[in-house]
Image 1 (cartoon, rainbow, N blue to C red):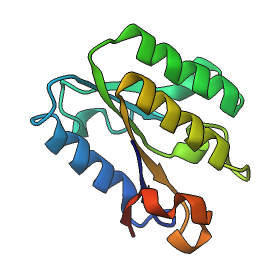
Image 2: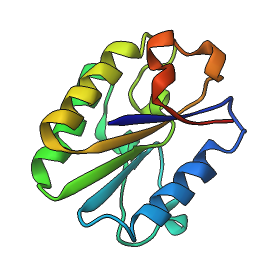
Image 3: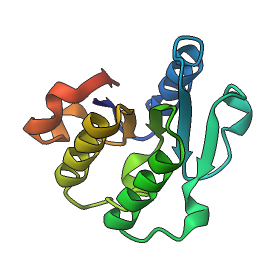
Image 4: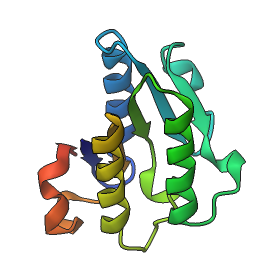
Length: 139
């Protein structure tokens, strides 16, 4: 399943994401990966969560991002959840249509049993109608 945490920049999406990942680590039996644009939040994450700084991997478009995510999934058969902070930025989707990428994440989720939780810097009203049912938190 793909879930979204949405709201304009500065509304507190990252805090919501960090709170969720740190509370989920006690509940899940598998592993959790947190993708971010830097290592800034390293000390706010539980040490059982694997933080990956996507900016280090020379990703330049959404296809490369999906390949990267697929690679992470292929290397960890116990992977249960992935969190994407600043999703539009790390997936190279700023100003682009995000629906095809989220559809592919949904397919990956079904095929491999991995849940994706994404923070998106947009108001709920700006989201395409097809994504509104995926909103977990709107700030």
